[in-house]
Amino acid sequence: MSEDNSNCSDSFELLEADIIDCRLCPRLVSWREQVAREKRASYRDEEYWGRPIPGFGDRSARIVFLGLAPAAHGANRTGRVFTGDRSGDWLFRALYRAGLANQEASVSIDDGLELTDAWVLAAVRCAPPANKPTTEERDSCEPFLRREFSLLVNCSVVVCLGAFGYQAACRYFDISPRPAFGHGVVVPATESHPALVCSFHPSQQNTFTGRLTEQMFDDVIATATAIADNLSSS
Image 1 (cartoon, one colour):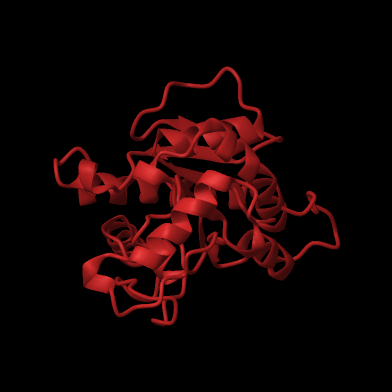
Image 2 (cartoon, rainbow, N blue to C red):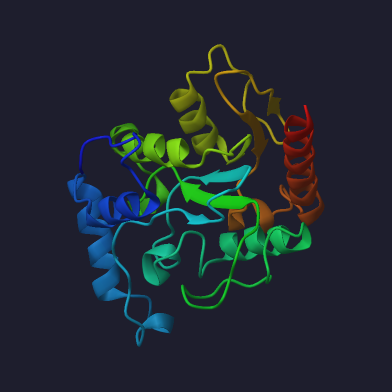
């Protein structure tokens, strides 16, 4: 990983290159590349990305969606965050319904998906074993998070997808004390940080069991949009 370059000389292009080239965490490097070699049977004819995943979306976005980490056979395969897995299916359908995406499906890095007023990223940039990054791996990725938020100059709301994303946001923005994580919990914006809006992660564990419904997800995005609109007009 390069040094933190969160200054006027940084750019989205430099950040993306540094993320893609990162080999700082041996466990994550080994796992992401093993998955890319062995593949899932249904994707055996595809070439896996097998590298860290940059953020994606509208560079002038007011709303940032912060997830946990790339899925082994989703973004680790396709090369774009939340693309090619069922969590991404839920996320981009919801963004489409909210008018923040030009299409409801996200299957590959070149499928024409464009976001408006929204940016999507993960706290950890490599697919972790069992989808469980360590605290040390999260902290190793934090300089990327710092640089990314410094470039997203219009960000006024962060939608935290799951407790891990919420904890990463609170740690980065130094929010303490903080409310306990819960779906729909809102941490108001201050002069030092954007508003945080919490959502259950759109994982299969939550969506298949009904813990997270599409209406619940739509309501969170509507809340985030309303907050962004209010902050823009104040």
